[in-house]
Image 1 (spheres, rainbow, N blue to C red):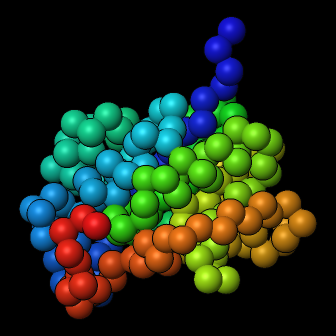
Image 2 (image 1 turned 90 degrees about the vertical axis):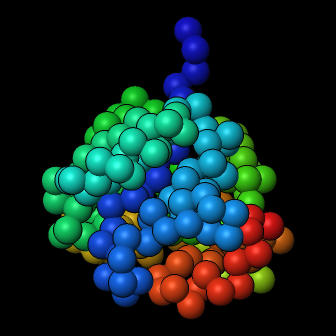
Image 3 (image 1 turned 135 degrees about the horizontal axis):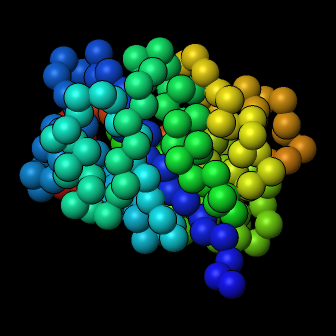
Length: 196
């Protein structure tokens, strides 16, 4: 029997309120839509990949499906990231672990995703990358956390679980500033050199 998969969950259901337009479809310097760039960096690290989107995000869902991601529509996406994350977990309950990535973080090195996934496969309970002492994304969760993750709600995401369970966290030190670099406003793209 094949081992249970590590499933990547790309959270792509945010509202882009501060960006002034749909940032996940916004083209980077090399013309790749922002969410697609994030998806391509996550994909190689995982056995299966899902993309959680808002209702009505057909164009985004289609683009991500072309990249090999199974779309999961989160009907409660507008109520916060916790709802979207829970929807992704419930769509892959039999995973050995989940790699949670954000679609507005297109600068994470593919090797960082691989390192976090490998630490999960090696038995890590909660795996977080760190760059110069700062915790970032993606965050890996072992199968034991599935029930708690599937019940998340609100806008906190999984932060509460990390806060309550510091002893479970495995830290991966990486030389990758992309793990702490998200895109909230157009100014955050000014440094974009086209997929370095």
